[in-house]
Structures are given as structure tokens and as C-alpha cells.
Length: 164
View 1: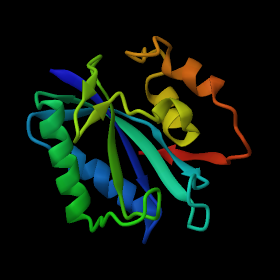
View 2: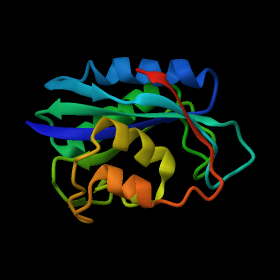
View 3: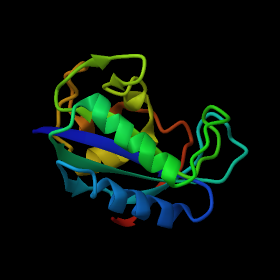
């Protein structure tokens, strides 16, 4: 069994409901079990600024699936929920990313783990620091909380809402 950490985000339709629905669907992935959940965070968009704010969260998942099999299941969930990939960093019904997969380092054209930008994004690291503050990043060799605390706010607003 591996523990995967999955980032969740939405800013279209009902983002709050979309994130909760995604968590429910992740919980149905075969040979897997959700073992932890962060709170929900309302976050200002990064990249493309002229869009609605996001709801973000993270879950930990104990799984027997390989990283590539797991990302395939997550892509299926995104498609089932209506995700259409158009504008990079643009609005989305749901976005599911494998942030970490155990302590594995994967560099594939379909999956890169650790997520290559996670350590620079407050909207990713706030839920990760809550969910697994002492977890060590396999490349940076720093804890999730240390990484989060080192990211400058740069004016980005992140508000914790509630648990999921």
C-alpha cells in the first residue's frame, strides 16, 4: 500500500459541492481508502486572474494502485464531473492532482510526482500543511509545514472554511 496525497480544486458551478463530490468519488476508487482530509480553503486564483475564486482541499489515500493507474482514475472522475481542459490555469469544474505518491519520484509524460509546482503554491500547501504537517517532501527533504511557511503570501488570500 502507498499513501497518495491528492490536491482538489474547483471554481465553476458550485465549487464547494464539486469538491465534496470529488472526495466522495475518490473514496470509491477500488483498492483504495481515504485516510485523511484537510479543510476547504477559498483561494484567490493564480495565473489567470480574471476568474472566480477557487475552493481547494487535499486528501490522503491509501492505495494498492500504481501512480499511473491512480491518475487514470482521477482523470476519469474529472471527465465524469464535466472537466474540459481548455485554458492552462483557467476555470475548471474540478481539478485533481497527485501531489505525492509515497516517497516515490515519478517523471512520466502523464504523471510527475512530487507535483512539480506544489512547493510554490500556497493554495496547495495550506491544505497539505494541515493534513500532514510533518510529512517530508521526497525531493526537498522539508516538511509540508516548513514548505508552506516559506512561501511568501504575495498578497494571495487564502481562507480556511471547514473540514471535508
